[in-house]
Amino acid sequence: MRVAAPAFGPLPLVMLRLTGAALFFMPWLLQARNRPLLRAHAGRLAVLGLLNSALPFSLLAFASLRLEAGFTSVLGATVPLFATAVDALWWRHALTLPRILGIVLGFCGVLVLAFGHVGLHSMGSAVAFGAALLASLCYGIAAHYGKHHFNGQPVMLPAAGSMLASALLIWPLGLWLWPAQQPPLHVWLAAGVLAVVCTASAYLLYYRLIARIGATSATTVTFIVPVFGVLWGILFLHEQLTAVIVGGMLVILLGVAFTSGYLGKRAGQR
Image (tube, rainbow, N blue to C red; front, side, top):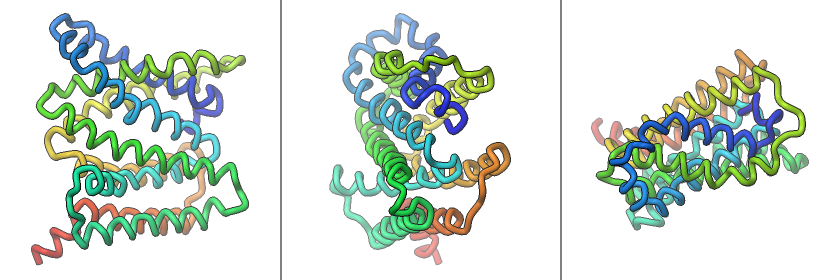
């Protein structure tokens, strides 16, 4: 996203990303036996595609215009915090003390990043910061929505169906905002990798996790996203690793450990 978003623009890039992912799933989507499933769940697939793909992808692509890749990936670690909050508000599940502590710690980490990196004087960076957090909220809602409405269904249904629905949703805006100057080859390659590796393959694995271990637990994959996001940013984009990013990341991940129940369970076992 950090490489391709400035050249394509956020919405055209998201259009390419979702279209490529939908084409990846096309063999399954075109099978006659799957069409009744797609028709029966068309409305829910559109909502899931909006919440879990079209909207957060657009927000993150917009954020990537202003924020470093590593920094954006650290903000992505807040997804389990939002998923836990959504679980409590939507399903009325009581929050345990460790989970409350985790949410507080996690958002303290967000504040560390906000005041230490963005700065109140930079409106553009602050808006991008908010967009990245809003994307995490979308993912948190989508995880529970997908688990509730597609529990017991083939994993390919939400993975492939939501990609197709979200691609159709984004196409009008993506075409309207298509850049006048064609991006160079390496940018097209970045968009292709984003579509096939980071979207189609990743979402297939992600929906398998939701089906097997639950929505909130599945979002804890964000433990490792910031580590690799920061690492790739340093290695390939020459980004700087600052004390603010490290401190904010550690506090957020500590909060995620509590909200996921990992630290609470460990403490209870002792």
